[in-house]
Image (cartoon, rainbow, N blue to C red; front, top):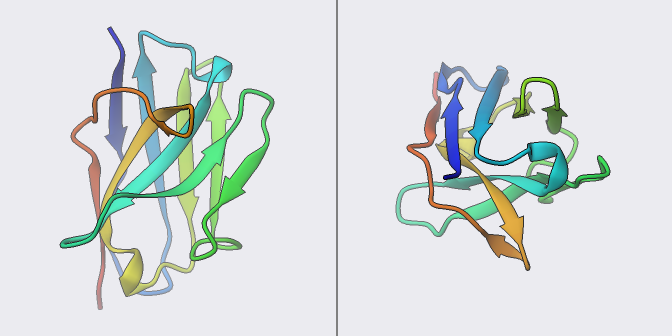
Length: 117
């Protein structure tokens, strides 16, 4: 059974940084396209970053240049380094496996990111 556990969220001031972690069990993150999604209140969940099995990365335009997705194969984890945070980045962040362009697994509990002064 696949389990994805997100952590690392919190309250940060605009311009600050956070590093989110996604610990996986039941799959090897190195074998799949993995993504970080976010959902803000009243909005649909959106994909913000992905990393392929080969290490190629892609980002939503809204986070390009500020967020960096990475992977630690030994720890079987995926990370999202978020810099220069803006109030519009405030959301619950989730990770998931991407399969045929869609999230593949059940959602975890996510981790809340709050950007406020």
